[in-house]
Length: 355
Ligand SMILES: *Cc1c(COP(=O)(O)O)cnc(C)c1O
Image 1 (cartoon, rainbow, N blue to C red):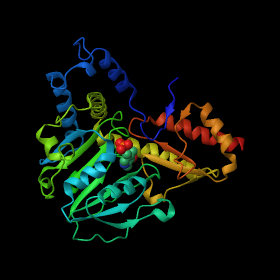
Image 2: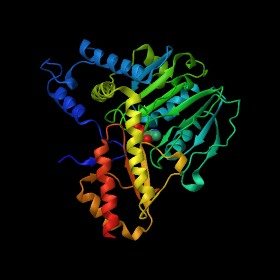
Image 3: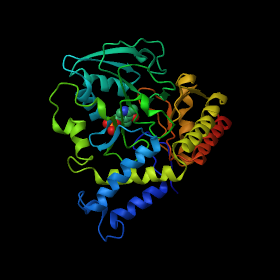
Image 4: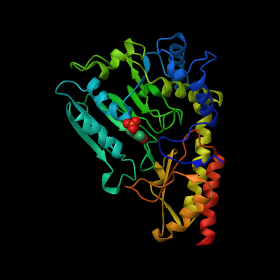
């Protein structure tokens, strides 16, 4: 039987998407050729790329003037690329430090200019989202991480600035309805809520490009990728195709609005058990709890072996917490059915009975 996959990333994808993807690897669209052996310049693949890009626009309700790219290098390359394209020569950027990914992002930006870390929750292992900070006005952009995959915290309200706003949305894109006009640049590695590892979604407001005053290496230049319709070089054909299938799956399900409601129900079910069951305590501050990554610890570490046995026997996989937080992390991305969360809740209750 298929496991209940709570892995943080790569992670669960819809079962029907995996089946369609497997079929396309053998015989794509009845061409008697594999998806991964046809030219990326073929009309069939160009159609895949264009369909994927337009599904992103449609599902996120992107306004005119925003473009969509499928690039490579992961969110980690976007840490550098975003700075390369937006940090002016002798420029400055502000960063909100809400975890390991934010820290890595700002480290790359420091290669290109001044970085002002305007708030950080590092001293409490990033278990909350800082709220009272002031945003300097003399910055080229403000960067933040909307969902902190490792710690299970999530911005519910976004920073407001007249400067450009850049968001690493890797682990919660397509999970809730947002007004994208507030962002100038958004990026997300595919492997959390969209597809397999190997492509990164980038959403950029066209008018912000070409203003940094630097020479940008071709592969790091958003404008070059835009000019080539996201095919400046050979795109990652398989991850783009599977992302397209997942986006189509999401559209058929009713889109982001529908999935947001399900995501809220799923998270509520699990957090209610964490708060009720005396053997567990939540890690993240309640008001900042993530709807995607649910982090929790045992109240008595010594009981861990018993709990681990129970959830393993229940067919649950991937709930061990990140080493910096310990305990457990249940990642409950879009493709996670509520039935699997119920299995985890049952295991937690079983544990309570056995202890
Ligand atoms: C996983 C993750 C990353 C890193 O993504 P890569 O594609 O491995 O580079 C960056 N930011 C966030 C928020 C993540 O969850």
